[in-house]
Structure formats: structure tokens, C-alpha cells
Image (tube, rainbow, N blue to C red; front, side, top):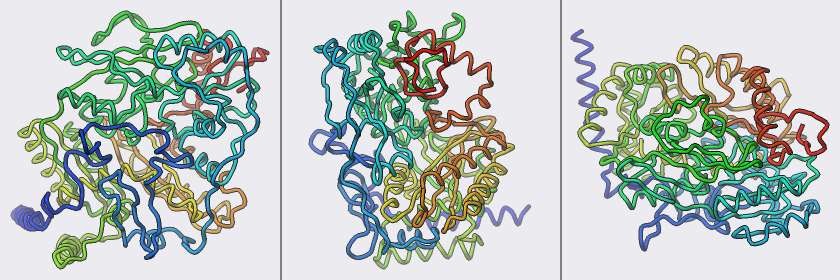
Length: 633
């Protein structure tokens, strides 16, 4: 026992020494504690949502932001939207070349500059009927292409190298609930399809147009419905239109000293209505809850009228909850137009942190104990070794004498003193929020439990940069396509008893799937634990491979992802924790909710959308009743 105490005391002394070589706020690159992603407008400090002209048509995010290989052969983050924009990352390219078999920057294919589309299907009677009942309308084919996709790897591959078989025929921007309901009524009358469109960040192929749809398809873009209708400070409630982008919502509430707290990885571009429609979860769900915990009232426009409750109260016992029929409905029942949400005062204090563990098993044991004792901070994420190394490569290099000394000191401590293997260790990033005294006590308890599991404090700046990395994942994915690297993430939730088994088996099966298909280069797979619950956790997987020389890379990619999903289900995991189903995972829905569950959903669909106006084809197949309107069976 005395030896254990001496070891703990020694660890604490060295951690304290290392904390003194963490750069202070004034010297720390360009990251601020108050914000780790998008910069506010510099003149008035109010966040300005991005205009469509600022965004890529064929990839993720801002036009000016990308990871590129610069003239010096070093990967650089371009643009000025992020705190590390303009930084170079000398370790990143060697990491990719080491991790990805076949990676070769000399082998490059340039993405196409535009996309051809088939001729539109135009319903003139419908267009005439809705005149004066929208804020904007566009028939431009490239505008339709922008609204034809989400952000799966398969969709981005098509954008860069292929062609969509079907795109929307027109894009319409409504300005309020009444306009939405009117447009839907006319679509029902004139037999026109509507696909609701929020931020376009779906990773389930939910906004892809059904290829065999013969009716006119309208992409109903909700982003002009971005108003806060009212705020009740006493009850801490707000009524917000469904097209409000997450970042803009937090900025506007922040001006009142309030926050919503729902922060998915797509926070910069996704919308409130989209979160409801997909049953979303955010990075800070431990403090604020998932979207279903934050919603008090939902207003939805359907083809038979508007559905909503008569009051916005904390709880109501009036039979099955109609909100549960709207949450996760993925645009097949109607359009979410207004949502009444819970608010909280902005947390008084924010603190970042990171912990290094000798291996993933130790990290999972730590996470389980944190969940068991309900001590999880606002955000807590455990990365495996590959993702830990990636995070290290995305830290700007400091070539000053002090920076070199600091790097050597940390490596010496980890490898010589703590006896960590740099090829086995993993890392956990932390975000604490709340009253300063509460945060301090929570930090004390969390780091005490970490020490029990062999964890070592890795510094506040490591935590901040790990949190920032979340916003870079999609940009990193897009960097790979011109170099024949295709990659994507998928997620699941699983009981604690199955976490390690699931991680191991899914990784093994994903890699083996590539071998079985004789891919020229190996598939790589990594994972992280991202959200904690009493009974289990959410796990993210990332996989990819070099597709140079592969005849049909998207078919191969689909097959490998399907095998990974089958293994997840075999290990007791869920079909999705928060991404949703869309068309990408629809084949597993009967297994997931049972044949009777499918019948229940089909019955609801037939009742509220008898003409299948909302024909995106997500979640379920419409029952074949010989109705010529049903084209997505």
C-alpha cells in the first residue's frame, strides 16, 4: 500500500512539473477557451451564419477551408474560419503514409468542377399554385445539385467523380409555418414530392432523391425559417423555427446570457429541425441531454394538416407521445417547422483537460467507473491509439527551443517514467462546464478515478485541441479523395459489457472484409467512445482504404460498411445511436424494430401521408397497395 501511495505521489509531482511546461493562454497558438471552432464576426462579435456561396458544392464546409499539400510538401489548413487556419502540420503526411497502405501523394486525381444532370421534371400547375407563398425559389441545376445530397463518403465520391441519377427539380425556401403548410397542401393536390432539407449534413443518404421517382421533386430548404419566436426567461423556454442553424442559435441565445447546449459535430451547419428529425445527440449531452431531452413542443406540417400539442409543459400523460412519432421521422411524415426548447444560463466556467492511458482497456474501465458514479463532465471522449496519434499529428509544430524541450520532456515522461508504449496508449479528452467550484470538484474526482486506472493528466491544451479536432474530421475525410483515399465514420450504442468485444470484432471484420475482396491495399479501422450512459456507451468507428486500382470503389466501400454493421448487430449494438437510418441503413430496420414495428410505422405513414408526398424513401418501404404514387418501394 505504501508503494502504491509513493507511486501516486511521484506521478502527481511529475504531472505538476509537466503542467508548468504547458504554454499559457497568451502563448497558446490561436485557440481560446471560449470558442474552439468558428470565429465570430470580428466587428460585432455576433456569429454570422454562412451564405451558400461561402460553402463548397462538392464537399464539407467552407470553400476557403481545406487540408492541402502545400508547395513545401507539408499539409496545411487553409482559410481563416478556424483557430488553426493557416497552420501547417509537418507530422500529418508521414502519419498518413505510415498508417494507410498505398498512400502516395504523387498519385492524384482532380475532382470534377461541375456536374451534369438529367432534365428536370416540371409540374407547372404546382409552381403556379405556390406563387407568393415562399421567400425564394430556384430552378438552377447546380442549386439543385447542392440539395441532392448529404455527406456520406459515397455521396461525396459521386460529387467529385460521378453523377447523381436524380436530383431535385426545384428548390423552395419557405419563410414561415403557414407557407410550409400551404406548399405541402399544393404538393398533395398536384401530386408533387417534397424532401425537407435543413443543413444538408445527413450521413444516412436521407436527402438523396429516389432514382425511380417520376413525379416532380421539391427540395424544401428550411434555412430561411431561422427566427427565435419568443423566449420565456422565467420558464427557461424558447420557441425556435426549425431552420435555425445550431451555431447561430447559440450565438443569439448567448446575447441573452442563455444557451441550448445541443452541440453535434455538425453544429456549424446543421439545423434544429434536422436534429429533431434524426433524434440527434451532441458532444455535451452529459450536461444538457440528447435532443429528445431538450424538446418540449414540436410543430409539424403534414399532408393532412398541422400536428402539435396544445401546451408546452414539462411532462404530459395523454397516451402515446406524438412527439415520439416526430422525433427520428427523417422527413417521411412531414416537416418540423417550430420547436419549443429548454434553455439554461450560460455556464459560468469552462475547463478543458486530457488524460493518457497505457491502453484502450484501461481507458474503458475508467469511462465505465465515471458513468457508474455519474461523474461524466459535459464532454468526455476516449480515443484509441490510432486516433490519439492522429491528434498528435494535428498539433502545429513548435520549433522553438522551448517547444522542442517540452516535446522531449513529455515523451520522456510517458515512455521512460510511466512506461507507456506510444503504439498502444490512448487518450481521453474532457470538457467541464458549470460553476467554478462545481467544476473544480468534478475535476478532482475525475482525475482521482483516472489515477486509479493508471491515467496521467495530459494538459488543458491537449483537451482543447482534441475538442477542436471534432470540427476537422469531415475536412480530413475530404482531403483524401483526390489521393484515392475513401473513408467514413459510423456509430452505434452498446451495453458496457460488450464495449471491448464490439470494438475488437468490428475492427477485425472490417479489415478482413477488405482482404476477402482482394483490395490492393489494406483497410484501416479505428474507434472512440464518445457518449456515456448508465448502462452503455456510444462508439464511433472510422474506416478507410486507398481505392487506387479498384474498379468500383463505392460498391466495395458499401459492402465493407455492411459487414461492419452486421458485426455491430451481432455484438448487441444498435443500428444507430444518433446518425439515424435514412436509406443507408433501411435494410436492417425490420431486424431492429421487428416486423410488427415496421407495420406500425407503415400504418402511421399511410394515415398521415396517404399519397406519399414525403417520398424520400427513408426508414421504411411504403406498402405496395398498387397506388401509382408510391415510387420508392
